[in-house]
Length: 195
Image (cartoon, rainbow, N blue to C red):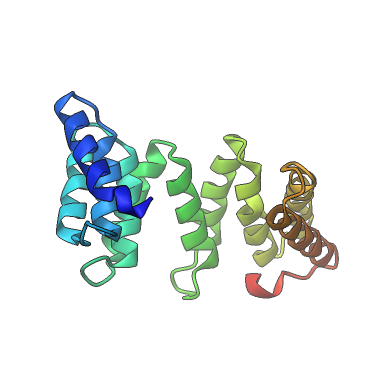
C-alpha cells in the first residue's frame, strides 16, 4: 500500500480540483508519515490539515490535535493540541472526545489529570453509543473511588466485548481484560494501570 502513495497524492490533488474536501486530511496523513516514494514533510502535512479545516473538513481539527501532541517536526505543543482537540470535540468528533478523555483521565502528570473533564468527554462518547470507548468512563469513576458507577459502566463494556466481533483473538483479549477490570472494581480496587 505504501508503494502507491505517490499515485494516491496525485489522485487526492485531482479530487481537490474537483471541489472535494476530504483529500486534505488524507494528504496531511501521507505527508506526516511519509513512505515509499513520498518523503515525510511535516510542514506540508500541517499546511494540508489547516487548509482542510479552513475549507470545512472538521476531521482536520482532530488530526491537528494529534499532530501537535505528538510533536511532528517540532516539539510537542500540548496547548495547541488541546485547542484543536477541543474544536473537534465541539463538533462531536469521536476521536477528539476519546483523545481528550484519555488525556485528562490517564495523564501521568497528576497536575494535568482532571477526572471531571475525563468523565465529561467519556460520557459524551457513551451518548454517541460507542460503548467500547467508554471503558475510560469506568477508569475515571474507579480513580475517583466511585466503584458503583465504574461497575455499571464496565459491565456494559464486558457485555459488548463478549463475542460481538466473531471471536477474533484481539477481541477475546479485550473481553478478558474487561472482565478482569470488572472483578477488581467489584472489590473496590482500580485496575493497576488506572491508579
